[in-house]
Image (tube, rainbow, N blue to C red; front, top):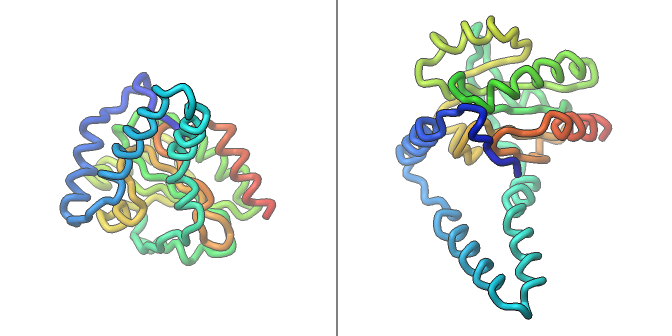
Length: 209
């Protein structure tokens, strides 16, 4: 899982506060709120003992990647949102294509770094069946998003994310990028600033399937 880079200038506190507020409104009980700290504490305790150290290291590596493995077996939740021109954007309409869903905001530093990559990927792989969809979490909505789209020359569909969609995709920080295969299943989830060539490799791999 990618890690947020503080140097990118993202206002993390504001972004997280916004996302937490959305999740509180849905009153969801997150299974990871207690499981993750407990697993972390137990695993780190094992590191202190010489004998089980190798086992603990394997457990820690497994814990760090468990979310990606879990969601990778799930069908991507469908959504129906309106784009900048008022047209419906439905994930189910893209069945048979490789879809990249990017949760972002204009005040997210990591998002600003990644968006030009997605513009490039959409241009390069469109004819091979790639669809990129950006779901904005900007509080000001289209007032902020539309000028940003023009400034960055975004060539893929953009819609405003709803609280329901962010909850269903378990979005807790930005950027969050979800790779969806041709069968409509989540192949990978990246939280935080990703790696350009890793994104490219995953897209090419999914397009070959």
